[in-house]
Length: 395
Image (tube, rainbow, N blue to C red; front, side, top):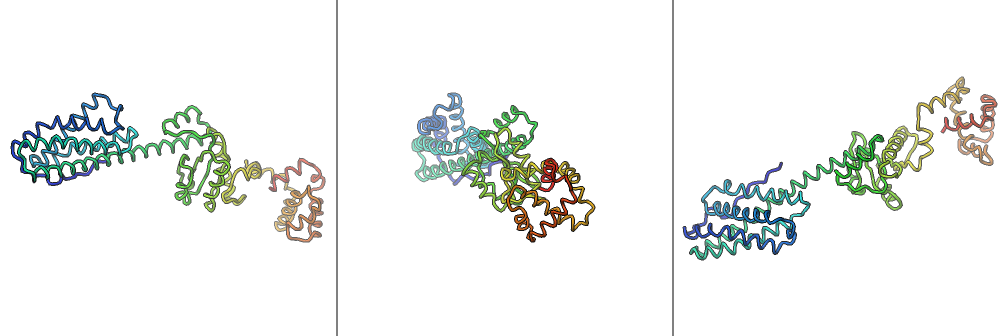
């Protein structure tokens, strides 16, 4: 836990109050606490109706004790650090409590201002009755308000520390939630519970977005703040909510030039499938099979389908392309690219010219090569199932 810094009370030890003034000042401290709390209850609405009577009594006692420690330090009766430490730490904890209650610091700062003003009115009256000099009254007033500033600073430090701790814990829980969501075996019940623990409101859909870690840091500020994120060694995984229409266009624009891949948008509890597809797409991008800036799964459905099982696809290619195995590598490669183009243009009129244009060769060259292919494959090229397998193997 962070600890508050130490402060000094301005003008501490310089007061020369008469004994009678000091006695009367201490006698009115409980009443000053009462007036301070009454003013806070009346003038700081954020606390109205939120605190029990017992809590107000404790606050009233705390104000009186705080004023007492201040008097000890300001008059030099005790060492400043010893006298003020409990009050400073108490203010620090008050700030933490405000953060944990979900409140900002405005209410507590107002309470310090209002309370110190009301307390000073009562303390000032007692000083006048105790024959304190005007110079000492002014000096004590300056010290009171400096002390109030110090309490406010201590409470702000406690508030910031609590928010930081809460923020880190929430970030950790949301990172764990993101990991859970990408594991297909995770039950919906456990994910819903984890979302509640992380204070994350589920959207209608989620989209898995994978970004190389070297490119991801400067993207965080531009992606929907509701997104979940977990950081891998090479890739950061973002689960982005409701990526449709204009939101998708903005996301694609943000990701451009970052070698990212975008999975499909799916119901939020099914985002493991979006992540699985995005991971497969990333493999295809890395091996140069497909390109995109970013690469989107919805655009490359055919490639994802064809390359879903690389080992199976390789076995298929080995089988259906076996008739070409006896050719020299250069001749085999020429016939492979010709066969691929020929099959892909099979339904087009003027197929030979289209293939020639695709391969940057003369139509007569295409005619010669296709003749070679017919001779090598024979009747297999008339078998629809075999042609289908060839298309898959060559795609």
